Image (cartoon, rainbow, N blue to C red; front, side, top):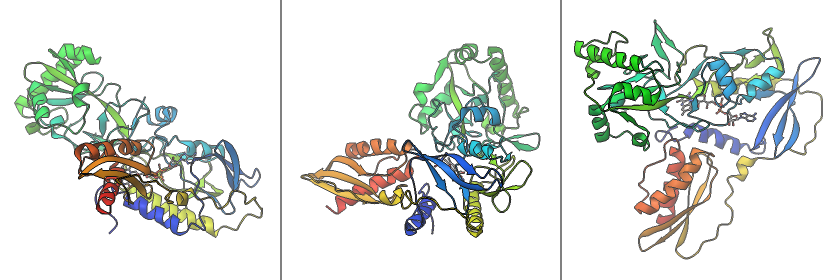
Length: 454
Ligand SMILES: Cc1cc2nc3c(=O)[nH]c(=O)nc-3n(C[C@H](O)[C@H](O)[C@H](O)COP(=O)(O)OP(=O)(O)OC[C@H]3O[C@@H](n4cnc5c(N)ncnc54)[C@H](O)[C@@H]3O)c2cc1C
């Protein structure tokens, strides 16, 4: 069995282990940004790549080929605006994917495809609560308080623009017989009345900033003014929604009328939403051999692509297809490159034999004081995570993560908060950090390990 449960990073861990098993043949560099490809000016063959590592530009020679796998462009504001037509999107995944592979491929003459296609995920058709620019948004999958009752979602003109109960298709919205690419607005708000507010307070949404982000007003026009949308538009929309709820038919978008209740007297509430992005699909076009094509549809020799950089989905998205693309095109690209004749050049071996993945598995000398115990777990995403636990009189006094290789952003949040929660509760049975389930689990397991084996 691959998975032991939800969000267990199992696929990643299997692949990671495969690299560790072949560490004598595979080098892994951290903090190494690909800048350019090195291309023969006459034959156009790709002969290597220029990498920026710890401030130094290193030309890495590739005997058989280069495979571009730098992911999407969700954190490149200019590309998001140009290709996706959105002023901003907040990423649910990596905050490091800045579309470098697109620029790198364009430099050597690659043709681009599927640049306008992307997916999102989350509440309603694929939304998160408003998130500051440059930060990851929180993934909350569904919540009845936001689409069942005196509640609806509006765009900038104060009007609804979709059926709020429609099943989530990675952000795509059904319109005129077609699931269309996620649509964005500047001011997407969820609007609801006092009854709905009370329901939500009794059935809290798992988002701790919900109440502090609410905008409240006594009348609909005052609410519209506060959130900066058309007051006439919002008043008309509430009147229409009430009429549709009372008539038992949503003529606008076909929402099940059982989920629609007319708005009562004020006060009224609004909460701002944010369009998020799981990942983009666009990038250099590849053929069935994973070869990247030039603008005349000819393969650029020794250049391959895999993963979501230049994914195969044009307008829609086949659920699960992204990881399949990583595996399938990664395998094809690797096999194709391996079958190439080696380029007849020699390169310096000064930088060979560096594998920072292997270094990350070593446990450094960790000192232990009185009542201190070490525990470890492999449940995280970065290999061995080690904690030092101070435990006495049946109480967890302190938890320190003394070694980890978890992710930089949400992973680090878990490293800070989970130890505090464990000490406060004197138990490992604490809530995980959303988006860092594997890291949270690893810390809990490691603390348990330290206490059980003390
Ligand atoms: C929350 C979430 C849930 C998902 N669920 C699913 C699912 O259930 N099924 C599914 O199929 N897909 C899912 N996806 C999508 C899937 O995870 C991605 O499409 C897939 O991981 C992409 O893999 P990749 O290797 O192509 O790119 P990435 O995993 O994005 O890796 C690209 C890497 O390249 C690095 N990089 C970028 N620029 C450079 C550079 N210049 N030099 C060196 N390195 C660089 C980045 O730092 C990154 O590490 C999900 C995505 C998210 C965010």
